[in-house]
Amino acid sequence: MTEHRATIYEGEDGLWHWRVQAANNEIISEGEGYDERAGAVKGLGGAHPEFAGEDMSDVDSVTVTVE
Image (cartoon, rainbow, N blue to C red; front, side, top):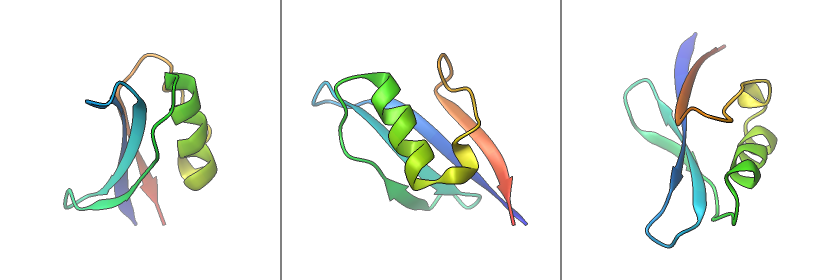
């Protein structure tokens, strides 16, 4: 098992993005820009189901263990 960390952030372009990193901090994937934070959270859950149940409404990052 390993850990993945998802981060939701506002980019320099004023849009919301998500990024998933492995335990070694290597970026596994990144999402497109979304007008609203909720869109980025939803996009993250669609691309990475292991994060779909995580409440990221008011946190910038969350770590989950994946098999």
